[in-house]
Structure formats: C-alpha cells, structure tokens
Length: 307
Image (cartoon, rainbow, N blue to C red):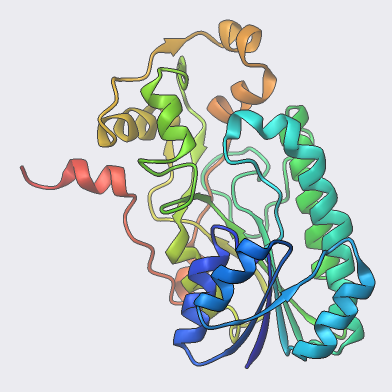
C-alpha cells in the first residue's frame, strides 16, 4: 500500500517507517527539516519537505505521493518535559491547525483510511483501567485539560468523515530510544538529579508503551477494523511503583517524597495531577483485534529477572 506518514522524523516516525518498509509498503515521509529528510531517505522511504501549516505544500505533496493511507504523527514536543508548558501552545496549534490541513488534504485526495495519534493517558479519571469508550479529561488541571481538549477535538475530527475511515491510536507514554523515558532521556536525567519526586501516595496510574511496540500496533491498524485502540503496555502502575523502579533501573538514588502542598507550591497543579489523578488504560481491545503483544515494561522486567 502507499502510506503517507506526517511527522515521519520523530520518535515514533523512525521505527514506524522501518516496519512499514519491512512489510513491503511504499512509504512517503513528511518532514520540515533537511536533517529529518536525510534520515527518512536513509531508511529507504520517499520524502516530502512540507509544512502542515502550508495547505498548498500539502496539496503538492499528496499529489506526488498519491497515498491510500495517511498516518498523522504530528507533534511539536520539547526534548525535555520541563519545557512542556512553554511548548504547549505550539504543539496544540500544530495538532489542530496543521493536522486539520493534513486531514482536509487527505479527504480531498480520496485517502481511504486516516490513522491519528491520540493519548491513552489523558483519559477521564475513574475506577479501574479505562477502555476505549472513556472520554478525555477535559476538566483536569490547566495544561492537562488543554491537551485533553486538543485530543478530544482531534478524535472528533478523525471520526467525522463518512468518506474516509478513521483510526485513533491512544498511545501510552512512549519509552525506548529517542524518548524522555530512556536511560539517556530527559526524564532519566531529572531522576538522577533528584528533580522528579513522588507526591506522597503517588497513586496516579501510568500506562507506557515501547516506541517500537507502538509502531507495530500502528502497522497492524492499517488493515484492522476502524475505530479507537488503546496502545499501551500490560503493566499500568502507580507512580509510587514505577518511579522508584525506574530510578533503580537507571542507577539513580530513590526519588524523594514531597507532600501535595509542597508539590503545588513548587511544581504546580499539573505536576500534582500527573502524580495523583492520571488513569491507566486497558489494552484488551488492541490485544484481541491488533494481536498486540507489548513487551514488559523494561524497568520492571529487569528487576524481576533472577540475579
């Protein structure tokens, strides 16, 4: 099949393109940078240097590529999550305005299926793991609510067309190469510097997914039934469990503990929300329909292995 990947030089774009090519698909990767274009070409894909905010450039890119399926992995996230608040307006604009242009171009060119990156960790708080029927946490803390509303709008857009099948991939927190949650990533550096404390209790449940497993699930969704899939690992766990084990895994000292009041005063409402309200997601549907078999979370597996 002819596949067009927007955001192709990003963290998930690279393993995604590799898997698509391995499966024999004809792949065009879209990027805005010359460096990104070189990486895409080195992987064996065609490349389109195009800006999602420039509708005419998208039109030309689609005309040349002639895709059957579009995969939207557009993001503008910082290299360090400490900069997330400052980067959020740009990321929101790219996903809504740039992604909107991409979606309209796909419709105009008769694309039959549109796969959209979404979130499996901004789901509405509640008991147990959330399934695909759960909505986004649009009433959460300020930045979380902004992101949740963005995802809600993106999801509605993706599922709105009668002429193009929509697939929503609600990924967990990415870990693995080129992500924040990697021994060489930004979060690991924060943990080593004792800058990622546990808010007492740490009951917020996080779902992760290895970047390569996310790519495999995305490729499986090319031919599966349209709809929503939680692409998350089998080990949703509270901060009080995963964070100390992550620290041990990367050779860092145990994270300190602080009270919720101290966290509010020093880090703000969003930090507290991440630690206390985040809800994990169930991957049962993806396991059944996509044959999704994610690896065990690395820092849990490493610690459970025999000495």
